Image (cartoon, rainbow, N blue to C red; front, side, top):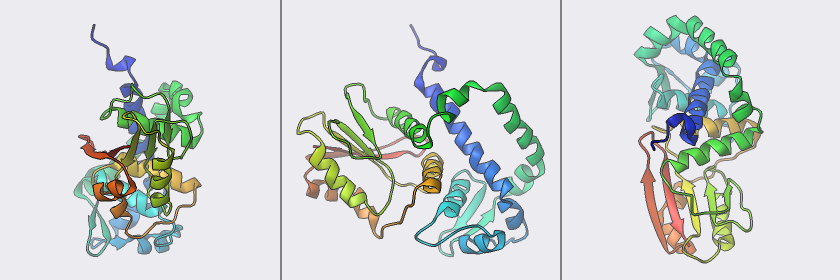
Length: 256
């Protein structure tokens, strides 16, 4: 018997995925980010946008605004000059999104009116629990976790056989070392690192944005080296594997 998508966790993920994307768009409209960039054909940097709109932004320390801009870029509402770090409106945003913003606002209200059960599924949980649920659903699209009994996400907990780390912060190196020490020494023991992918993976960017709004997060220089197979083998992991989904999610699996 074929299982319908509406009877699976994948449907929950697709609802949540649509919701978090829409939140970024409507938040950007409310903050008047699009309206500001409409007046600057040559674009503006994140710092310039924060100054003109009086938004909080501190380079290498508080990056919520930059996460929003990068999410909009990954969704093709903005384009980014990687050399000058300047953001501009795309033709789609200029010609279609902005002229239809009132229609979008009505659709947003309709969503809440017709989907009250979504409140129970995701929104009534704590922010961190909801985000972690969505991330696990994304990972299950790539990795079979049915054989594992205890999964810990974004924290280092004892008595687990899977640890998922996806937040890029100043404790990343220490988190990986702690994960290796805690994971049991057997073939099922698994560390999953979610690799930052600013260009394509708007879902992870958005979720990271929501967590950064409530949790202080300072960036760590040269953190990309900790997402390498070489580094993980130096820690002691016996084998590693890279995976990528069609929607941009990149994973690095490390087996102890």
